[in-house]
Length: 485
Image (cartoon, rainbow, N blue to C red; front, side, top):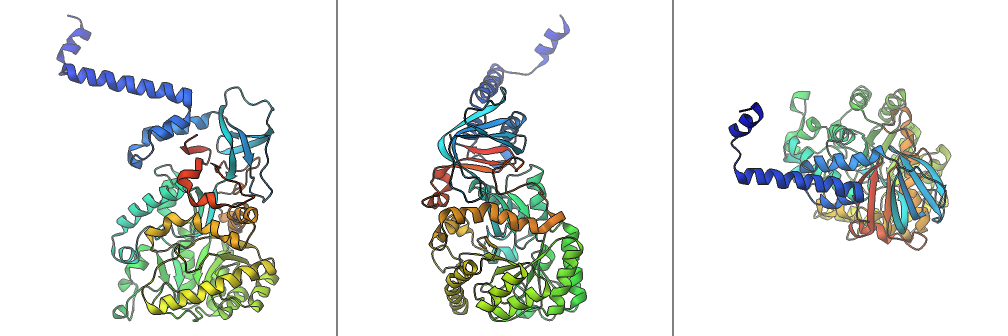
């Protein structure tokens, strides 16, 4: 008996095992054939809704299309600059970049994977400038009491949902997102590009001091709070401590620094009108950031805090809804960016039960309307973000919170703000920029982060409120993560 036959007889395969093996091989063969015929569209559909950990093989098939050029044709192009969508163009993607914008009848590479966009809108992926990737998808109690591993599991799940809402890039405005960013960049999980700030730097009794009264006083690092040990926020008092905590975030890979320079709505022990950190402390943070060729953004609402931050060299005001005209003129004079959020105390807002917090939220909502008016009156460089925090029920409203701002902006201007304009703000991180290519635009050399959508941004951008229905292709870095065309 030859060795091959002997080997076969020694196997313990039953007929049903051999049949299962045959069916499995046929299924894999059929899938490969359909992938060649239908490209990434079939693979994305076949594996839609499966657990991310079970999609490794499917993802490898999706990524294989990146080895071939991709041509998007029969589309209306919104390039991110604010101009009206153009027809009669094709977009050539090679690797993870847009290589060229071509006329509709121009020659394209023979081996290209051609996607007919059926006359739909092609636009850049959306950018959220104030997102908390580690803290948005769970409530405050879970965030303050759960093991750090649980925070990462929930953050990974929310990261994929964020990408599926069409947000291909976010600036993380505070939290331990460094490992999450690395896992996404390395392809271990799906999610947006992350510009991490690391831990929010707060003073004692500041907006990021989440300790309870019974945890005071703190006399050494040994009795730090869980939030500090987890890297959500770091307490720093005095110039030396501020320098240390800022440098620690830079050491871990922060692309910018988040300082908390005033009171807030979500925190319990700092009044909304409180001014936090001395000018010397803020200047120390700015100096440490500038020494690493990046910038400081600061949470602050009130005029006194805004003006102190600007004098200290801060380059981006987060929130600032209660700014007065003098403060906005100061932003204009110093070229400071204004990162505004649609805090309108409506159905999309963070929910509070504390009467003081509800009253503060109402005050901020009234200031939001005035803030958008002042930002446009003085032509301030304005970015857009959501700041959904400790509110898993509201993360799905991310796109809706952009769409409703057409009460303040022309739809094309607003869509530019959430793409190319936000990308300009990201570039403030200079050589700390983790993704130094062109973001927020569809142009030669730009990252291939884009969306094919049903919608007409010359009329409204309501379509971004329902990405599951209206976003047919979502691509990040040249990889198609959703395709229902």
